[in-house]
Image (cartoon, rainbow, N blue to C red; front, side, top):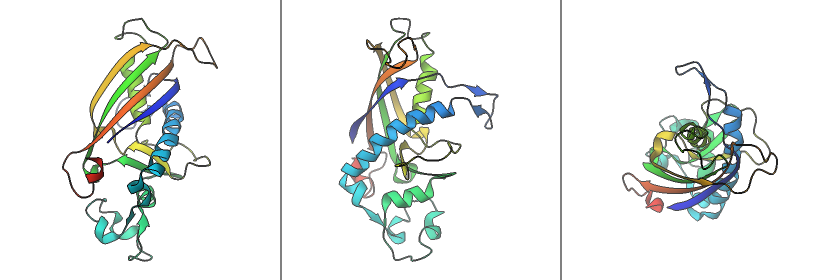
Length: 216
């Protein structure tokens, strides 16, 4: 399965305070502003994809494609009820007040390839030094997945909140091409962090099963 996501706006370097698993991400708010732009597009993808929008799950059929914690918790009131897939996933992937719906997740054995056309205002400086390309791409990938820490409260239209990845470990291939962004930001023409991105997403099953056949 292949589709494209786009983004126009600032793409800044990811920064952290300290080392180790408890360090603070100083760009979390910036990453979430980008995540919001992808949410709008992925929400439309789910609406247009018949299987994603219409498929309903029951505990018996879902036991092999959901984490063990889903077994009794999500159907405690009535285990015979069939629930829309997005609702089931949203209840599983909670962060604070947010309920996330990842498209690519471990339980259904999917991998994801990303090819990024990165149009930037600091071109034609060296791709190895201009704006710290690696860390700007890190910001992008973080914005494509469920955040580690709850990002405050969802806005109208953000429950559930759609993301591409449950974890960035699902990305098995990442390719970046950079070029000049000939148009500057309308808000701040001098903003060197401004970027235009076209992201080609390829999703493939690792092991083909009846649960991920629609992605083959």
